[in-house]
Each structure stands twice: as structure tokens, then as C-alpha cells.
Image (cartoon, rainbow, N blue to C red; front, side, top):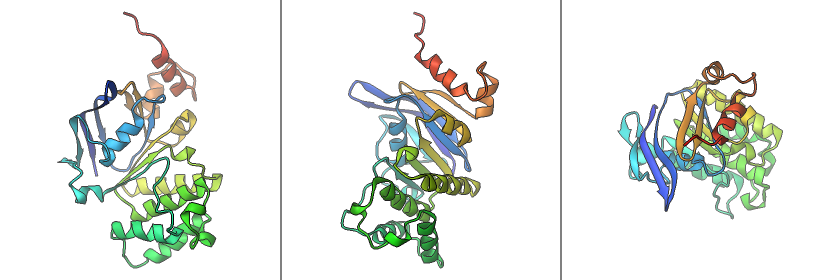
Length: 246
């Protein structure tokens, strides 16, 4: 899947969350969204997922306009917010099964894949437990397993590294997300952790005040910066904080 944003804008009252954003995202990439609080990162994710409808501009999937009514296109993505939604009375296994059914994942080997993912995220002993009784990090793991099982073309995450997952869960997530990118999937996640964005992304997308400030590889950003290695993004954000001359 190729994703195109063409002059996408979204406002909430007088606040311009996104302002004329244009992007091209190729298959097989991990994209980190960076920006200060309120910069527009979550709004961009919500527009990509169809939760929010842009006020102007268009989101295209493989050249086709993305609309909420396009169920076929919506099945090609999955959005995992910072606080995933669950039916409280469902067990871990029931929630994963519900998502698998929605994405029509009935291929031979699906059950074995579920077991493997539960083992990877150290949740196998909890398959019959109510999701509501799990810790925040464990709940996020459940939602993540369901998403990985669905294996859409577009993986969207809002602050996955602030999800409460333990180091094992974070490491497993990184490994499986990279595997997905190798298979041509697109992974887009927001973060406030600059060092993480430098080490775990193919392209960095910096949003400031709803506008696209940068969208490039770390190599190209480093080549155009005078900052020391490892401080490129810090220098970029320092520039954003500097007042502009009238």
C-alpha cells in the first residue's frame, strides 16, 4: 500500500491541528511522528485511520480516496491508540478472537500463531483472564497481539513506547514491527522520545503547529544539520522553539 496525504487540514474550533499537510509514504517503512504536545501527531493518526474526517484535502490509499464508508480500505489498517478499547468482560482470548474475526483471519495456522504471540508477550498463562483485570501494559499487549494477528497493510500507533509495556514487550514490539516492514507493511507511530525515533524509524516526520516541518531519513537530516551525531533531532526542535523574525 502507498499512502498519500494531499493538503490535509483539520481544525477543532480555532485550533488548526493539521494545516495543509502533504505526505507520500511508501510501503515497507517505519515512520516516527515527532512534535511537541498539541503539534498534531494524534490528529494525523486519526485522519489516517478514518476516525477523524479532514476538513480539507484528501487521504489516498493506493490512489483511492479513503472514506469511512470504504470498509474494504478500513480493513487494510489498524489503529492502536494510547488507551486501547476493550469490552471489560471479555477474556484475553475472546478479545483477540473478536479482532481476528473482524479481519477474517481464519487461515490454517491462525490458532498456532495466537499461541506464539501470547508466548512472545508473556501472556499465555492469562488467556482466560478478564482484560479488565490486567495491568495497563498487559492490556496494551493484548491489543497489540490482536493487531499483529490481523496483519493489516497499515499499522498505526499512538505513543506505543509510553504504553506501560515492560522491556520484553517493547523489544518484541520492535522486532515484530520491523518484520512487518520487511514484508511491505507501513508502520506509523508517534513518540516524544527523540533517541528512539533516531534508532527505530526509516523516516522521521516532524509536525509543528499543525504544519509539516520535516519528513526525511535520519541520514538526510544529519547531512543537512550542523549538530553533533545523536543530537540532530534535539537541534531541530531547538530551532522550532526559536522565535521567528518579523
